[in-house]
Image 1 (spheres, rainbow, N blue to C red):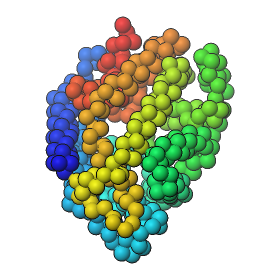
Image 2 (cartoon, one colour):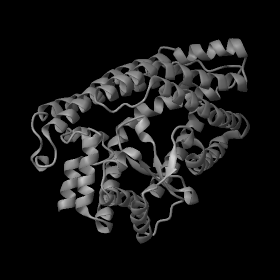
Image 3 (cartoon, one colour):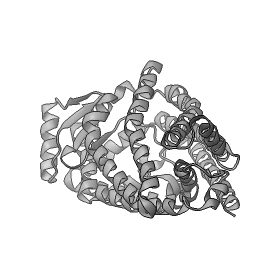
Image 4 (cartoon, rainbow, N blue to C red):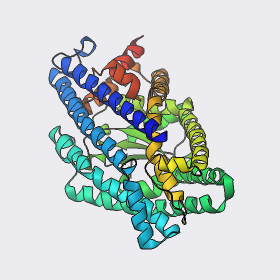
Length: 413
Protein backbone atom coordinates (compact mmCIF):
# COMPACT_ATOMS: atom_id res chain seq x y z
CA UNK A 1 0.00 0.00 0.00
CA UNK A 2 2.81 2.45 0.86
CA UNK A 3 4.38 1.79 -2.54
CA UNK A 4 1.19 2.85 -4.34
CA UNK A 5 0.66 5.88 -2.10
CA UNK A 6 4.26 7.03 -2.53
CA UNK A 7 4.24 6.51 -6.32
CA UNK A 8 0.92 8.34 -6.71
CA UNK A 9 2.01 11.24 -4.49
CA UNK A 10 5.32 11.58 -6.30
CA UNK A 11 3.57 11.59 -9.68
CA UNK A 12 0.99 14.12 -8.46
CA UNK A 13 3.68 16.43 -7.07
CA UNK A 14 5.69 16.26 -10.30
CA UNK A 15 2.63 16.98 -12.45
CA UNK A 16 1.74 19.94 -10.23
CA UNK A 17 5.31 21.27 -10.30
CA UNK A 18 5.49 21.01 -14.09
CA UNK A 19 2.09 22.72 -14.44
CA UNK A 20 3.11 25.58 -12.16
CA UNK A 21 6.44 26.10 -13.90
CA UNK A 22 4.78 25.99 -17.31
CA UNK A 23 2.30 28.65 -16.18
CA UNK A 24 5.18 30.80 -14.96
CA UNK A 25 7.06 30.48 -18.24
CA UNK A 26 4.00 31.30 -20.34
CA UNK A 27 2.90 34.23 -18.18
CA UNK A 28 6.32 35.86 -18.08
CA UNK A 29 6.81 35.35 -21.83
CA UNK A 30 3.40 36.88 -22.60
CA UNK A 31 4.28 40.04 -20.66
CA UNK A 32 7.88 40.29 -21.87
CA UNK A 33 7.39 43.03 -24.44
CA UNK A 34 5.81 45.67 -22.23
CA UNK A 35 6.81 47.10 -18.87
CA UNK A 36 3.85 47.02 -16.45
CA UNK A 37 2.23 50.49 -16.24
CA UNK A 38 3.12 50.84 -12.54
CA UNK A 39 6.82 50.60 -13.44
CA UNK A 40 6.83 52.34 -16.82
CA UNK A 41 8.61 55.42 -15.51
CA UNK A 42 11.23 53.62 -13.43
CA UNK A 43 12.14 50.36 -15.21
CA UNK A 44 13.48 50.29 -18.75
CA UNK A 45 12.16 47.85 -21.33
CA UNK A 46 15.64 46.35 -21.68
CA UNK A 47 15.83 45.63 -17.93
CA UNK A 48 12.30 44.21 -17.95
CA UNK A 49 13.12 41.90 -20.85
CA UNK A 50 16.37 40.77 -19.24
CA UNK A 51 14.44 39.82 -16.08
CA UNK A 52 11.87 37.94 -18.17
CA UNK A 53 14.54 36.04 -20.11
CA UNK A 54 16.45 35.22 -16.92
CA UNK A 55 13.29 33.96 -15.20
CA UNK A 56 12.27 31.82 -18.17
CA UNK A 57 15.75 30.36 -18.60
CA UNK A 58 15.96 29.39 -14.94
CA UNK A 59 12.45 27.93 -15.01
CA UNK A 60 13.29 25.76 -18.04
CA UNK A 61 16.38 24.45 -16.27
CA UNK A 62 14.12 23.84 -13.27
CA UNK A 63 11.92 21.58 -15.42
CA UNK A 64 14.95 19.45 -16.24
CA UNK A 65 15.99 19.46 -12.60
CA UNK A 66 12.52 18.28 -11.55
CA UNK A 67 12.53 15.45 -14.08
CA UNK A 68 16.02 14.35 -13.01
CA UNK A 69 15.10 14.65 -9.34
CA UNK A 70 12.01 12.48 -9.78
CA UNK A 71 13.98 9.83 -11.67
CA UNK A 72 16.76 9.80 -9.07
CA UNK A 73 14.25 9.54 -6.23
CA UNK A 74 12.63 6.53 -7.89
CA UNK A 75 16.08 5.07 -8.45
CA UNK A 76 16.98 5.37 -4.78
CA UNK A 77 13.66 3.99 -3.53
CA UNK A 78 11.29 1.81 -5.56
CA UNK A 79 13.95 0.73 -8.07
CA UNK A 80 16.25 -0.49 -5.30
CA UNK A 81 19.25 1.85 -5.45
CA UNK A 82 19.44 2.51 -1.71
CA UNK A 83 18.93 -1.16 -0.91
CA UNK A 84 21.76 -2.15 -3.29
CA UNK A 85 24.11 0.45 -1.80
CA UNK A 86 23.29 -0.76 1.71
CA UNK A 87 23.94 -4.41 0.81
CA UNK A 88 27.24 -3.56 -0.88
CA UNK A 89 28.47 -1.71 2.21
CA UNK A 90 27.26 -4.52 4.47
CA UNK A 91 29.31 -7.02 2.47
CA UNK A 92 32.34 -4.74 2.67
CA UNK A 93 32.14 -3.37 6.21
CA UNK A 94 29.74 -5.67 8.05
CA UNK A 95 26.91 -4.35 10.19
CA UNK A 96 27.77 -1.65 12.68
CA UNK A 97 28.29 2.06 13.21
CA UNK A 98 31.02 2.36 10.58
CA UNK A 99 28.77 0.84 7.92
CA UNK A 100 25.85 3.09 8.84
CA UNK A 101 27.90 6.26 8.74
CA UNK A 102 29.46 5.09 5.47
CA UNK A 103 25.97 4.55 4.01
CA UNK A 104 24.95 8.11 4.83
CA UNK A 105 28.24 9.53 3.55
CA UNK A 106 28.07 7.52 0.31
CA UNK A 107 24.49 8.65 -0.28
CA UNK A 108 25.46 12.32 0.15
CA UNK A 109 28.50 11.90 -2.13
CA UNK A 110 26.55 10.15 -4.91
CA UNK A 111 23.68 12.66 -4.70
CA UNK A 112 26.16 15.52 -4.94
CA UNK A 113 27.80 14.04 -8.02
CA UNK A 114 24.40 13.58 -9.69
CA UNK A 115 23.46 17.21 -8.97
CA UNK A 116 26.83 18.64 -10.02
CA UNK A 117 26.28 18.97 -13.81
CA UNK A 118 23.16 21.10 -13.39
CA UNK A 119 24.83 23.16 -10.67
CA UNK A 120 27.77 23.87 -12.96
CA UNK A 121 25.44 24.74 -15.83
CA UNK A 122 23.44 27.10 -13.62
CA UNK A 123 26.59 28.91 -12.45
CA UNK A 124 28.85 28.94 -15.48
CA UNK A 125 26.28 29.10 -18.28
CA UNK A 126 23.06 30.75 -17.09
CA UNK A 127 24.52 33.10 -14.48
CA UNK A 128 27.41 33.86 -16.83
CA UNK A 129 25.08 34.57 -19.76
CA UNK A 130 23.12 37.15 -17.77
CA UNK A 131 26.20 38.81 -16.29
CA UNK A 132 25.82 37.62 -12.70
CA UNK A 133 28.54 35.03 -12.26
CA UNK A 134 31.89 36.33 -11.00
CA UNK A 135 33.32 32.99 -9.91
CA UNK A 136 36.17 31.20 -11.60
CA UNK A 137 36.15 27.41 -11.73
CA UNK A 138 39.08 27.47 -9.31
CA UNK A 139 37.04 29.42 -6.76
CA UNK A 140 34.03 27.14 -7.28
CA UNK A 141 36.21 24.09 -6.69
CA UNK A 142 37.77 25.66 -3.58
CA UNK A 143 34.28 26.39 -2.23
CA UNK A 144 33.25 22.80 -2.92
CA UNK A 145 36.27 21.37 -1.10
CA UNK A 146 35.87 23.69 1.88
CA UNK A 147 32.11 23.14 2.19
CA UNK A 148 32.62 19.37 1.94
CA UNK A 149 35.27 19.44 4.68
CA UNK A 150 33.13 21.65 6.93
CA UNK A 151 30.14 19.39 6.30
CA UNK A 152 32.17 16.30 7.17
CA UNK A 153 33.72 17.81 10.32
CA UNK A 154 30.34 18.99 11.62
CA UNK A 155 27.97 16.48 10.06
CA UNK A 156 29.67 13.13 10.62
CA UNK A 157 29.89 13.42 14.43
CA UNK A 158 26.26 14.60 14.58
CA UNK A 159 25.14 11.70 12.41
CA UNK A 160 27.13 9.23 14.49
CA UNK A 161 25.63 10.62 17.69
CA UNK A 162 22.06 10.38 16.39
CA UNK A 163 22.65 6.84 15.09
CA UNK A 164 24.06 5.87 18.48
CA UNK A 165 20.98 7.30 20.20
CA UNK A 166 18.69 5.39 17.85
CA UNK A 167 20.29 2.19 19.00
CA UNK A 168 20.98 2.94 22.66
CA UNK A 169 18.32 5.33 23.99
CA UNK A 170 15.29 3.02 23.82
CA UNK A 171 11.88 3.78 22.36
CA UNK A 172 12.12 7.50 23.13
CA UNK A 173 15.45 7.95 21.35
CA UNK A 174 13.74 10.42 19.00
CA UNK A 175 13.08 12.83 21.87
CA UNK A 176 16.73 12.84 22.96
CA UNK A 177 17.88 13.11 19.36
CA UNK A 178 15.54 16.05 18.77
CA UNK A 179 16.98 17.84 21.81
CA UNK A 180 20.54 17.31 20.60
CA UNK A 181 19.60 18.39 17.06
CA UNK A 182 18.00 21.62 18.26
CA UNK A 183 20.90 22.40 20.57
CA UNK A 184 23.38 21.93 17.75
CA UNK A 185 21.32 24.15 15.45
CA UNK A 186 21.35 26.95 18.02
CA UNK A 187 25.09 26.46 18.49
CA UNK A 188 25.68 26.73 14.74
CA UNK A 189 23.64 29.94 14.60
CA UNK A 190 26.02 31.35 17.21
CA UNK A 191 29.34 30.20 15.75
CA UNK A 192 28.53 30.50 12.02
CA UNK A 193 29.28 34.26 11.69
CA UNK A 194 32.62 34.05 13.48
CA UNK A 195 34.07 30.71 12.46
CA UNK A 196 32.34 29.31 9.35
CA UNK A 197 31.31 32.23 7.12
CA UNK A 198 34.87 33.71 7.08
CA UNK A 199 36.11 30.47 5.48
CA UNK A 200 34.26 31.48 2.31
CA UNK A 201 34.14 35.28 2.31
CA UNK A 202 36.02 38.26 3.69
CA UNK A 203 34.13 40.39 6.20
CA UNK A 204 35.53 43.87 6.70
CA UNK A 205 34.13 46.40 9.18
CA UNK A 206 31.97 49.04 7.54
CA UNK A 207 34.33 51.98 6.93
CA UNK A 208 31.95 54.61 5.59
CA UNK A 209 31.62 56.76 8.73
CA UNK A 210 28.56 58.65 7.47
CA UNK A 211 26.72 55.46 6.61
CA UNK A 212 27.88 53.81 9.83
CA UNK A 213 26.47 56.74 11.84
CA UNK A 214 23.13 56.52 10.00
CA UNK A 215 22.87 52.77 10.46
CA UNK A 216 23.86 52.94 14.13
CA UNK A 217 21.30 55.69 14.79
CA UNK A 218 18.60 53.65 13.05
CA UNK A 219 19.37 50.55 15.10
CA UNK A 220 19.38 52.54 18.34
CA UNK A 221 16.07 54.11 17.39
CA UNK A 222 14.66 50.65 16.78
CA UNK A 223 16.10 49.25 20.01
CA UNK A 224 18.39 46.81 18.26
CA UNK A 225 21.98 45.91 19.11
CA UNK A 226 24.45 44.01 16.93
CA UNK A 227 28.02 42.87 17.44
CA UNK A 228 29.20 44.76 14.38
CA UNK A 229 28.54 46.16 10.93
CA UNK A 230 30.38 44.31 8.17
CA UNK A 231 30.82 44.43 4.41
CA UNK A 232 31.11 41.07 2.64
CA UNK A 233 32.97 40.61 -0.64
CA UNK A 234 29.96 39.08 -2.38
CA UNK A 235 31.11 40.54 -5.69
CA UNK A 236 33.82 37.88 -6.04
CA UNK A 237 31.12 35.27 -6.63
CA UNK A 238 28.06 37.08 -7.96
CA UNK A 239 26.73 40.45 -9.07
CA UNK A 240 23.56 39.88 -7.05
CA UNK A 241 23.13 42.27 -4.11
CA UNK A 242 21.80 41.64 -0.62
CA UNK A 243 22.03 42.48 3.07
CA UNK A 244 21.23 40.26 6.03
CA UNK A 245 21.47 39.66 9.75
CA UNK A 246 23.33 36.61 10.91
CA UNK A 247 24.10 34.99 14.21
CA UNK A 248 22.08 34.48 17.34
CA UNK A 249 21.88 36.27 20.66
CA UNK A 250 24.95 38.38 21.36
CA UNK A 251 26.61 37.11 18.17
CA UNK A 252 24.18 38.94 15.84
CA UNK A 253 25.84 41.05 13.18
CA UNK A 254 24.71 43.11 10.19
CA UNK A 255 26.25 42.14 6.86
CA UNK A 256 26.07 44.20 3.67
CA UNK A 257 27.13 42.82 0.31
CA UNK A 258 29.65 45.16 -1.27
CA UNK A 259 27.46 45.04 -4.39
CA UNK A 260 24.54 46.43 -2.37
CA UNK A 261 26.49 49.42 -1.05
CA UNK A 262 27.67 50.27 -4.56
CA UNK A 263 24.10 50.50 -5.86
CA UNK A 264 21.97 52.05 -3.10
CA UNK A 265 21.98 55.52 -1.60
CA UNK A 266 22.42 55.98 2.15
CA UNK A 267 18.67 56.47 2.62
CA UNK A 268 17.93 53.34 0.63
CA UNK A 269 20.39 51.32 2.71
CA UNK A 270 18.59 52.62 5.81
CA UNK A 271 15.26 51.45 4.42
CA UNK A 272 16.52 47.97 3.52
CA UNK A 273 18.09 47.62 6.97
CA UNK A 274 14.87 48.83 8.62
CA UNK A 275 12.98 46.12 6.75
CA UNK A 276 15.29 43.50 8.24
CA UNK A 277 14.90 45.08 11.66
CA UNK A 278 11.15 44.77 11.17
CA UNK A 279 11.51 41.01 11.12
CA UNK A 280 13.13 41.13 14.53
CA UNK A 281 10.66 43.68 15.89
CA UNK A 282 7.72 41.47 14.90
CA UNK A 283 9.57 38.43 16.27
CA UNK A 284 9.45 36.69 12.89
CA UNK A 285 12.83 35.08 13.49
CA UNK A 286 11.75 33.65 16.85
CA UNK A 287 8.45 32.46 15.35
CA UNK A 288 10.29 30.68 12.55
CA UNK A 289 12.70 29.03 14.97
CA UNK A 290 9.83 27.90 17.21
CA UNK A 291 7.88 26.55 14.23
CA UNK A 292 10.99 24.72 13.01
CA UNK A 293 11.45 23.26 16.49
CA UNK A 294 7.82 22.06 16.55
CA UNK A 295 7.92 20.59 13.03
CA UNK A 296 11.23 18.88 13.68
CA UNK A 297 9.82 17.38 16.91
CA UNK A 298 6.89 15.95 14.94
CA UNK A 299 9.35 14.71 12.32
CA UNK A 300 11.56 12.94 14.85
CA UNK A 301 8.49 11.39 16.55
CA UNK A 302 7.21 10.14 13.18
CA UNK A 303 10.64 8.75 12.31
CA UNK A 304 10.79 7.03 15.69
CA UNK A 305 7.60 5.15 14.84
CA UNK A 306 8.31 4.47 11.16
CA UNK A 307 11.78 3.10 11.91
CA UNK A 308 10.13 0.14 13.70
CA UNK A 309 7.72 -0.71 10.86
CA UNK A 310 8.88 -3.30 8.30
CA UNK A 311 6.38 -1.97 5.72
CA UNK A 312 8.10 1.41 5.82
CA UNK A 313 11.25 -0.13 4.37
CA UNK A 314 9.71 -2.66 1.98
CA UNK A 315 7.09 -0.18 0.76
CA UNK A 316 9.88 2.17 -0.34
CA UNK A 317 11.95 -0.48 -2.10
CA UNK A 318 14.38 -1.45 0.66
CA UNK A 319 14.85 -4.80 2.36
CA UNK A 320 15.61 -4.10 6.04
CA UNK A 321 18.67 -5.71 7.58
CA UNK A 322 17.96 -8.83 9.60
CA UNK A 323 21.25 -9.03 11.51
CA UNK A 324 22.34 -5.39 11.48
CA UNK A 325 20.84 -2.04 12.54
CA UNK A 326 18.50 -0.28 10.12
CA UNK A 327 18.86 3.17 11.65
CA UNK A 328 20.76 4.77 8.74
CA UNK A 329 18.31 3.25 6.28
CA UNK A 330 15.40 4.70 8.24
CA UNK A 331 17.00 8.17 8.28
CA UNK A 332 17.65 8.14 4.53
CA UNK A 333 14.23 6.80 3.57
CA UNK A 334 12.58 9.40 5.77
CA UNK A 335 14.60 12.24 4.21
CA UNK A 336 13.73 10.96 0.73
CA UNK A 337 10.01 10.43 1.33
CA UNK A 338 8.96 13.35 3.51
CA UNK A 339 9.58 16.12 0.90
CA UNK A 340 7.24 14.31 -1.51
CA UNK A 341 4.34 14.59 0.95
CA UNK A 342 5.21 17.94 2.54
CA UNK A 343 5.38 19.65 -0.87
CA UNK A 344 1.61 20.11 -0.81
CA UNK A 345 1.71 22.37 2.26
CA UNK A 346 4.20 24.72 0.57
CA UNK A 347 1.53 27.36 -0.21
CA UNK A 348 0.67 27.66 3.49
CA UNK A 349 4.29 28.27 4.45
CA UNK A 350 4.76 30.72 1.57
CA UNK A 351 1.66 32.65 2.63
CA UNK A 352 3.00 33.12 6.17
CA UNK A 353 6.35 34.26 4.78
CA UNK A 354 4.74 36.84 2.47
CA UNK A 355 2.68 38.13 5.39
CA UNK A 356 5.87 38.62 7.39
CA UNK A 357 7.45 40.53 4.50
CA UNK A 358 4.50 42.93 4.35
CA UNK A 359 4.79 43.51 8.10
CA UNK A 360 8.52 44.18 7.79
CA UNK A 361 7.86 46.61 4.94
CA UNK A 362 5.31 48.49 7.06
CA UNK A 363 7.80 48.73 9.91
CA UNK A 364 10.51 50.04 7.57
CA UNK A 365 8.18 52.73 6.23
CA UNK A 366 7.34 53.81 9.79
CA UNK A 367 11.03 54.09 10.71
CA UNK A 368 12.51 55.49 7.50
CA UNK A 369 11.17 56.66 4.14
CA UNK A 370 8.63 54.76 2.08
CA UNK A 371 10.04 56.36 -1.04
CA UNK A 372 13.55 55.16 -0.19
CA UNK A 373 12.26 51.64 0.45
CA UNK A 374 10.34 51.54 -2.83
CA UNK A 375 13.29 52.83 -4.89
CA UNK A 376 15.64 50.42 -3.10
CA UNK A 377 13.35 47.49 -3.84
CA UNK A 378 13.09 48.48 -7.47
CA UNK A 379 16.86 48.68 -7.74
CA UNK A 380 17.22 45.26 -6.12
CA UNK A 381 14.54 43.73 -8.35
CA UNK A 382 16.28 45.16 -11.40
CA UNK A 383 19.77 44.28 -10.16
CA UNK A 384 18.75 40.67 -9.45
CA UNK A 385 16.70 40.44 -12.67
CA UNK A 386 13.56 39.50 -10.76
CA UNK A 387 10.54 39.47 -13.03
CA UNK A 388 7.86 42.09 -12.43
CA UNK A 389 5.19 39.87 -14.01
CA UNK A 390 5.18 36.46 -12.29
CA UNK A 391 2.22 34.12 -12.68
CA UNK A 392 -0.22 34.71 -9.78
CA UNK A 393 -0.77 31.00 -9.11
CA UNK A 394 2.97 30.33 -9.15
CA UNK A 395 3.39 33.19 -6.67
CA UNK A 396 0.83 31.71 -4.28
CA UNK A 397 2.63 28.40 -4.28
CA UNK A 398 6.31 29.32 -4.28
CA UNK A 399 7.03 32.97 -3.51
CA UNK A 400 8.33 33.62 0.00
CA UNK A 401 8.40 37.36 -0.83
CA UNK A 402 5.48 39.24 -2.39
CA UNK A 403 5.91 40.32 -6.03
CA UNK A 404 7.10 43.88 -6.60
CA UNK A 405 3.67 45.07 -7.74
CA UNK A 406 2.00 43.92 -4.51
CA UNK A 407 4.72 45.34 -2.26
CA UNK A 408 4.74 48.74 -3.92
CA UNK A 409 0.93 48.89 -3.98
CA UNK A 410 0.90 48.35 -0.21
CA UNK A 411 3.45 51.14 0.25
CA UNK A 412 1.36 53.59 -1.75
CA UNK A 413 -1.89 52.59 -0.04
